[in-house]
Image (cartoon, rainbow, N blue to C red; front, side, top):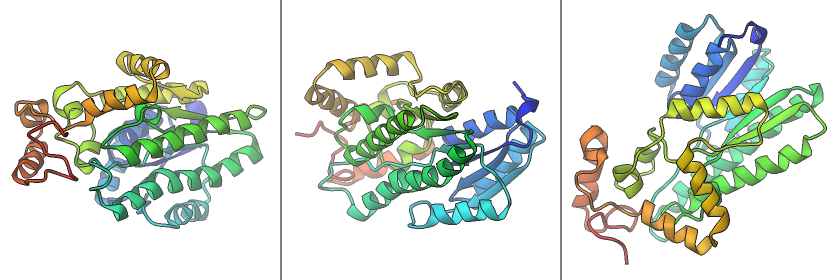
Length: 303
């Protein structure tokens, strides 16, 4: 897979220390791209950088940044400029969600999520797209979600932010038709990363009772689509089928379908309890709280 033609090129990846972002970084490293890895946890970033250097003899820079914060994207951009690095590929992977009934969830947390999922992504895109258009060269990969097309009870804010990412990206594709700059939106389904833990969603039907996509496979689909200049990438046959159904069914039916997937599971023998110690501890705490987490109880379907 290694491509010597990419020698000297740089890819900047946010959310690069774990999950899909980490797997994307490995693919870029295998293809001989130098890397700028951005994430919040400095220790995890350093480990990711070490891992990437073992994949290929490339240059790796790490920037620890809290992209929940206003101005953080600009600070990262300025640091990269200070290093004299030109970014050839931008990957906006960083993103989080918060599970629960909207009237029960924490507003400050959700405002932070909107900033991370929308404002930071939009800022990075603005900074680097201007440079790419000026030199008529560059690629951008935006992490959307299968929920971008599905009104999603219990993930109302997260799904809405991903709808923005998809709409924003598709609009840019049209704007850039006369250039050699491409924007690709990746719409993964539920993937086996730390997303569910951070979102307090390890007790959902989706996490406990269904198969999750492999982040390496999702990353490969996204990487290939990015390199092909595809406008959107939907990994997985079931994910594609859900997308087709979503386009046919009315939004109210899609929302009902998503509610059944995102509600608390009543299956105490679900995969989380068997395979993930952290998930088991979190679920035990959920079940010990009368009101559940963010307004949903974990022992019965919500009314």
